[in-house]
Length: 286
Image 1: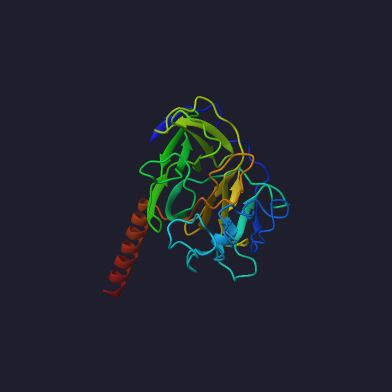
Image 2: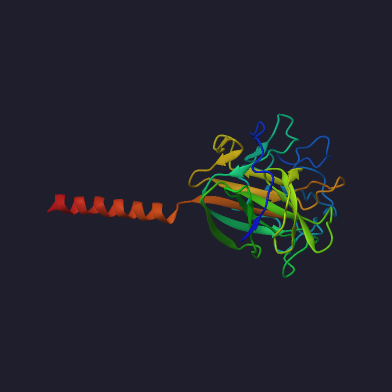
């Protein structure tokens, strides 16, 4: 982990609300939610994040897709719902569905599964572009970055004792000089070295992430910009690695899901309680 100095902690929350996610229409930026834009990864198919999560995006139509066996996602990986109708819920900042929301996640333990990384442009380690991971803000206002490096289809479990968010390295605009422009899910940005150290100041930025959950009725509560996840809650995350004015904003450059899982201590307490119940039962039988 690398501590990154910050002049900005978590941004004040806007009006974050969960909205029904419908089948992508792929008709352009003015008529679609921010995760539902026409993608430059398109060679005849629909390749934006909505299409990926709803099983519409295919290898044959999405030219930049990596690896070759990623698309279409399996039924287990996709947002729940019936194709052609409402598919889960997504987080947005206003009722026109086109404005992304600032967010972080509540403390806890989560399992993250990477479905795939489509773009190949961001500064990388071991060729694993684009770079991405999680971050927290410590008591000094410093952002502490952790990188996630996974093969597509692989999973990892991580724990955070405080609210955390996501970061993604952008290939455009390119900071040059061996640095990386990092964009955070609370809609801030800074420049760091490729060792993820630096960031003397942080400024407001566009949202490079889109967040989904299983259904509107089951959407987790939001307080102060933090999504309050409960054990078993599952989320789908898409990242956009182009932050330039001309970005296609398809949010499909990193795609995965994460699920809130019980902390080991909670499991131990549960096990202890279960043993106690069993012991009482044995005594009663005697």
